[in-house]
Length: 415
Image 1 (cartoon, rainbow, N blue to C red):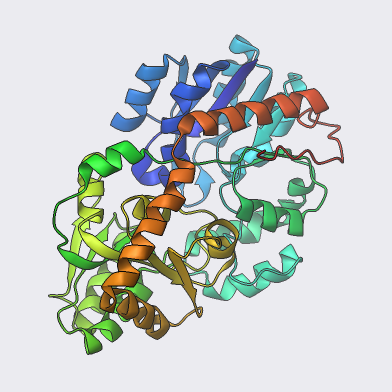
Image 2: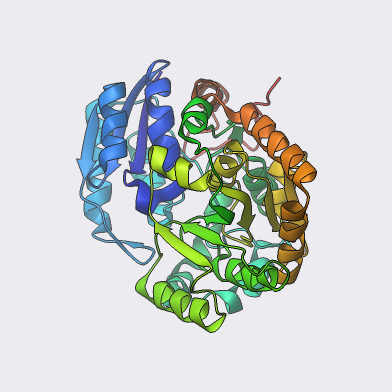
């Protein structure tokens, strides 16, 4: 089978989807004839993955203006050029870049090449904390909390195209995306590639420090949607009962505006001495700093459907406290290592964090449960098997043939 993948290739900006690509690419290349259309120049992590996998790569200049793909016609032309050269059996867009989701299907349909998308979130919507089965209604409810002007501008001009999700074949890589998209667009052509993520437990274990330096850790792209500001508020409440409690924050800011707002909020809440900003970290250094905390605070509301950051924290032996939102229940609901608390309540976050920090016995038991849960996601080899099987199912059932997609839904479930 010949597969052509399309993805951006910078981990810091592409986050989970690009991290996933970098890890699964060498394994997938052992199972199929894989080519990559790299949107932009690969960073060091992706370059290493490309070297390890020996995957042929077409590099296409790529930039975003907010949500808009800059010079979109040229990007599409370069993708068509790569498809003509390689003649793949299927083309997969590795995350939900809407401009490409809407323009590539007709372009590739003219070439007779099947196309599918791998959504990591819900296009236009993220993942609202209490979803209904109406996409339009949830979008209207979500808009008042949308603070990004570029998002408003894009939605006003493109939301009428959302019907594409009823016919566009999708590769589903976690239970939460399946929950949302099947609720909003039931019967759309889909295959499951689950488990869709893994962590390198041996590397994480090796990197663990001998001592705990911080009480709490938070790690993510530093945005409002990931719960950055709620984590600060939770620390203020926690320090009322544990005055010496400290937190380390790992990640880079989404924008200068968020960065300014963070430092203003930190100082206003009196957290200057309590909160250490470690910045963007990768590899062993990330796991060393993450593992230097005792518990993980992750009050994400609508920005996650899986959260690789949360999985990495569990792999480091950090029990986690998060809000009671769909991804926490769908993915992490079966482990005592993750406690969901009342949504939008930093006070409830702090109360549970305090309970864990107060009881050494419970902290040890939940830390053990955290590593046990993460061990179920310990193989990128298994992830590659699931992804390869999903592409086979797309082709075998004809779901990815553009222009006349099947109404049936295929489910590749784990045995």
